[in-house]
Image 1 (cartoon, one colour):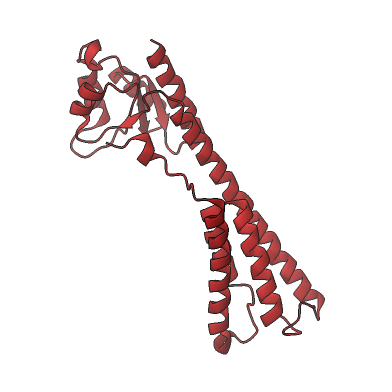
Image 2 (image 1 turned 135 degrees about the vertical axis):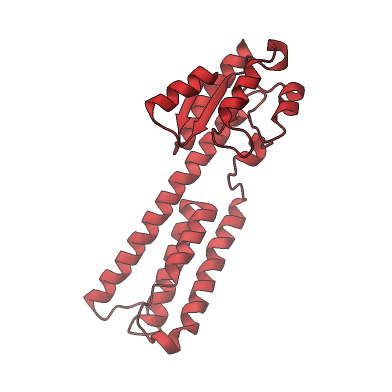
Length: 230
């Protein structure tokens, strides 16, 4: 069984930890670039800092990603862009390269922040549901009868038993045992006939993958809210 606490994994690190990661990965990227200097010489001054930005933005969002971008630009400019050990620029091409690197870093950070916000919105939606929701595994029968959740979310293709068989068994239960629980079929089958089959089997809604997490959160909140109020 997967509850909302383990199903939605949103980074919730303190700001100090996120910015510490941003600084640490920038330093690690600079150390790696220095170690590669005997091989690369002064070529590719920014290359090792791009993965660092990705990691920093993934862990902390926009702010930490930008911090790693700034530090990476400073390290690369100071050590591997002539004139060396200076923040000056000797050619227009070097300045353009630095600006291009900074733009890529800001873009990566912005995209990652969008992902973080989407996760936080989904988590907020799920936490607003009184009893949460559950994705059932092979123990679904015992869980349904004992916990009485407000919503069932099931895949169609599952090992041992498909979602159609599962929902038919659920609908055979009495109302007090969870037989009338709202159910969502979350599946890769997206054809109109697949939707008809899901609804005919007993699902309340058919959602085709891939699905936007915020959209799924809205569906879950609406169906579970109806169940709780009913």
